[in-house]
Amino acid sequence: QVQLVESGGGLVQAGGSLRLSCAASRIFSINVMGWYRQPPGKQRELVARVTSGDISNYADSVKGRFTISRDNAKNTVYLQMNSLKPEDTAVYYCNVCGATRGKLPSCDYWGQGTQVTVSS
Image 1 (cartoon, rainbow, N blue to C red):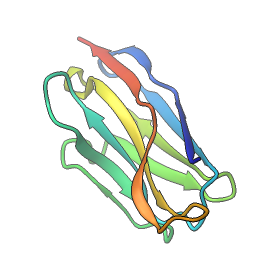
Image 2 (spheres, rainbow, N blue to C red):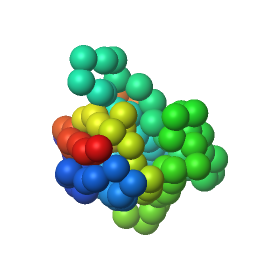
Image 3 (cartoon, rainbow, N blue to C red):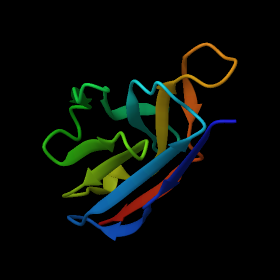
Image 4 (cartoon, rainbow, N blue to C red):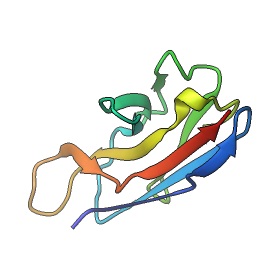
């Protein structure tokens, strides 16, 4: 069973920084790795994602403040979040596209979510 273990969330003041990590295991041929978030009372939205070829894209709301990166040797994706704003408050979810034994490749692998709260 695929496991995605997230860490790094927490409470921070506006203008501060946090770094999220997501380590994937029991999955191979990983293609896209990304981060989504779900603010209170809103739908889940894409924050950033990066391909196996290191091509990344970002939501307009985080461009210039957040940086996504990945360590393929560790099957880990990171999200460096700087200049955080109260509107960044959300549960952040890691998402991975890859294959697992006996199943077709899928992008339906999600972490458990980590809370990020930015106080004003």
